[in-house]
Image 1 (tube, rainbow, N blue to C red):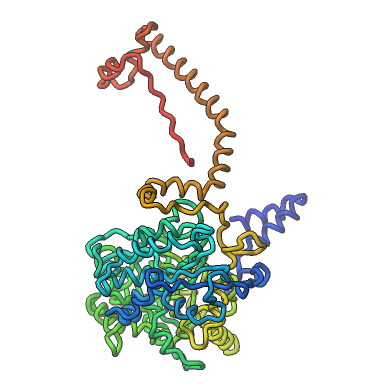
Image 2 (tube, rainbow, N blue to C red):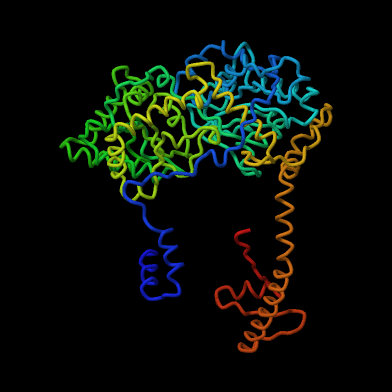
Length: 573
């Protein structure tokens, strides 16, 4: 529509031709081969890496160093399970414990690493006779006594947790909340320790904006994306220059909520359109059928009709394909990724997921279907070298064009080899478990920590710190006041934004009062007119009665006597 209007202007209005021509260029549709979102060169906006200046001290007291949980029964199985995606904290610890920038004298440190691996503790729960809640309480008591913490109220401390919300019976299995169906936030899982961590720097599965709304999930004042633990089988299955017979693969649900709801539903169209193509393998690996799985159910019926079988028979085939020879869907998904040139990474509940990092671990080019995805250490890793960030507008319009586009890329052997080589190089920059000594990925981590500690330098990422707050109270009596002070502290953290908001509100108060006065006058005139028209004027102390247009409620109005109610609805703040 914009293009048509601009062309009309070009033909009819000579004076507006310059502007119209400019707008026509801005709104011109890309050619069919230009479906990728290509941001500007990261080197043009990435801050100068300064992580090498970090000298960090790692707390070694067992109440703050949770590495002893690695020996708990079930820990190794947890790392290998799908729930291991929340264990990035473990691999960060393993890389930092022997890092050359670690110092043993806290007086020499300009940053302090807290190895409180909260999700590991949450999942292990009882170990050596101590529960998760008792560990959090002990860590709280120890940290609040630390003079290095009290010095800056935790502003120079950093830690990692890549788990967002613990949700459902699987995440809560083995905990006292096993039967709880609602999500459990990071702040709740870490109570009461979370009270002391609000000024800290946190590596999360995505960066969080400031404000009270994200405080329960952020965990600290400045957050950065540290990624997820990838599928462990993806790491083992990767081999350089491996032959990859599959063009594209995906295994997962086509019915999700939130960010990826519509994208995943349209992805089911690709399942239907590519059925019979041996180079494309899309599998609804959860056997998603029945209530709440409408997109998958619809796709199954269409594919079953093409094959001349029933949806139940087709679903059984997909179940078998998902499990593979091992019968383990998680393992089979990783092995399929290692045989694919492209791996779909569509948005789910949020833009990013462990699927994206599992693709990189397997050496597969991730195909991103979420325009706003921000990956781990993005200012320091040039993802544009390898990923395919496909415009979701084009995908929603024609899902199958994505497959045609990927086939064109794969048809260019030089371009395909370039992308696969770039993925292989990126593994050591993004994955803490990749081969080597982890120099690249740890440097990116420390760069992100530095940027959070020095947020005002040009190009730095992460949120800015407010003025440092006083250290929390530490006496036994005052500790009881912590819960009552939570809201006040949250308000202090956002004082800058609040002051701006108050100034904006004050600038509109006069207009609001004038509007209310005008409204009162109009109401009075309306009442006078109604009273005069109906002959029910009663101008004394009793006010105006009997003006309700609904006869059935006249009695209620008469009981109201002189009362007149004006309702004002405030919208958009």
